Image (cartoon, rainbow, N blue to C red; front, side, top):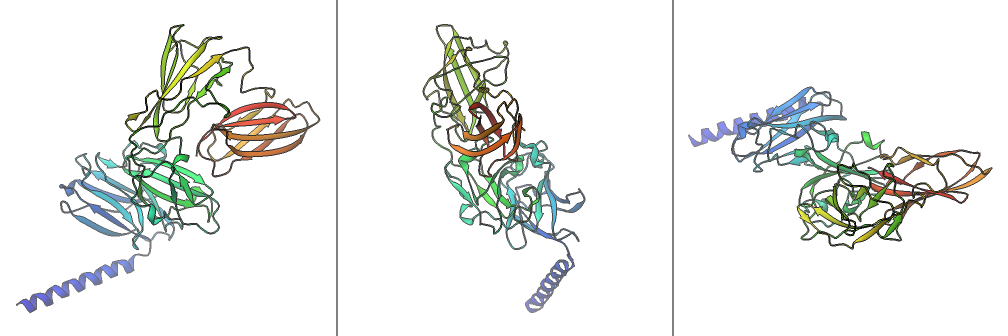
Amino acid sequence: MTHRYLQSRGAILAFLCLAHAGLHAQCTGNRVVVNINSDFIPSETTWQIRTSGGALLASGGPTAPFSFKSDTVCLGAAPISACYSFKLFDSFGDGMHGLGSWELRTTDGKSILRDQFKNGSQSPLPVPASPGYGSSHTFCLPLGPANIAADECGVFNSALGNKVYCNKVTGATQYQFEFSDPDVGFLRRATVNRNYVIYSEMLTNPLVPGVPYFARVRSNVSGPLASAHWGSGCEMGLGIAETVSCSQLIPAPAYGHSCNETRAFNPNANNSFIYATPVVGATEYQFHIFNLAEGYDQTFIRNTYILQLKWNIDTAPPLVNGSTYNVEVNVKVNTLYSGFCGNSCTVTIDNSLPSMEQVGLPEATLWPNPVRDGQVNLSIGDLTDPEQRIVVDIMDIYGKHVFAQEFNNRGSRFSTLLQLPGEVASGVYLVNITANGRKTVQRLNLMR
């Protein structure tokens, strides 16, 4: 009896293996592996894979509570190079309670995307945290040649100065790193001309300490970054600091400093700003501006380290010409505040001084501003000398030079296209423009 049972069981297993091999042989397109770790009610969770055009290719879901289920899915007779969308649903609307997880892998085991689907009716959220994320998890096959380095994976206590590496791709001159929180639809991308990115370079839209991010990278080795395929990735994150660094207005001699500055201020203009020293990971900056003798005491809350000195009278009284104000800064990172622990700086308003933004070259214009692709148009008019030597020098808010270029020009107008290096990170920069001794300073906002 036992012998017959074993024979029968062996025949069944052999049949299943042949059927499985036959299914793979019939698949002339790409294949992807969908891995699901289920929670205690697996019937509520389902997933779908569609073409980039929206046609349904495959669907499925877990079948047993607290179990692992792996499905190798044939993506049809699609081209060898194609893009797809993946989406998860929970019929009860509470996700998998953080007890389950999902992952997309290639058939040779490379990780494409993953997350936990902790709550909600679908992953990603119907309204993603980053509008650019879209309504589904997108992936393209075959994977690109740039892959996150293995020793970066599973590291969740990185400091701000740590680097995230990928392999060097021969012929590539640009790499784009992406850090995403797939279930909530958050993403942050950084484009550099080297095979690593530093956490501290991502000042705007920073990563939040304590949040696991899925990191992947692509390169321009086969064409523009926007159409390149992402390589394999993995999860990583910043460690939660026990304390938050103090901030204050940027001190001299850095260009664009605001601490202890005497400056002109026009409440009707758009060029009056003060700058705090950025703290990476900060999601809130509080600017406390006060002059106790005059009874002025206001706190302005912003999600950036820049405060424009322009507000409606219903919000707060305007700053007064001839008065000096003290400014303190409080910073929030994750759920922690630094407190107003930095130095208290002064800002004196003197409208008899020329505006910082325009000193001698009133027709110097930069556009677009903000700039996203690093290409900035510069136009200068009202040039009176027959020949000019024009110098463009760009510095960050700490006074570090990031770009410099010289030009020779004839005539009353000059225009050119500036190409900023790929390693210049997102942030606010000061563009110093000189034409035969006439100078101006423009502020440029770079968003990668």
